Picture 1: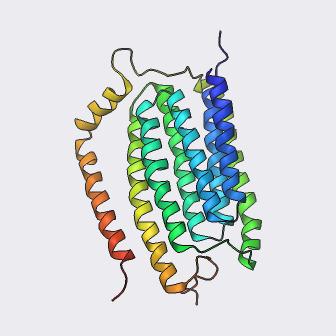
Picture 2 (picture 1 turned 120 degrees about the horizontal axis):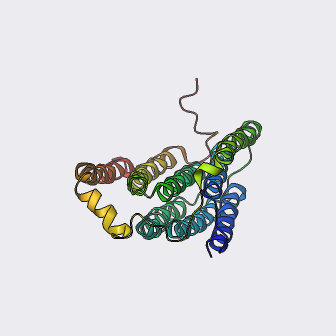
Length: 168
Length: 103
């Protein structure tokens, strides 16, 4: 079950990410990024993070990606064109990304034994659920950071309004 | 016994997503697509946080992912507003043509 979920949705996530890289038009990239985020939500659920799976769907795929699609449709800028800058970026981009991938996967594979195996759903401890555990810590120990995030969101909204306002 | 998935497999999936995000960040010429590849990298890092939280049976990793989501939402709002402002003044989204600070 876990293996099937991992193979299906992991494959879907990689395919969506590659599609983001290969598509020329930003709206196609945005829609394939939605696929990546939805399949990551399923993977979070299979790792026992139900709260994060729900908030991934609501916050990322629901709010942020709708925002992206909205801006793409508003600006209507069309496809990106190939320029001399992109040729230099090809020379740096693919080897750089491959080097990062090789380094990370070497570290993870060499520590494979110590990392262990997953079991579906997972558990924190057998008494409390995932969501009550998160909310307990969030509303006791981390109450101040949690409240500061609301100020951060407020400042971001005000900043977005000021930046996007038409000049008089 | 069901076949089990090693945690390293999840971490390598996150590494694949992260490096595809890096490649898209460097190769893409469209400002919005570059911004979306940053979101892809944030998501890849979130997956490693959840995988390690699963490994240690601790909830701290999941709480950190929550804060990353909040910051990503704020960053998307401000970043897209900046993109709209750039498009108003320059009439383009190609990063090669946004070279006001190049001497």
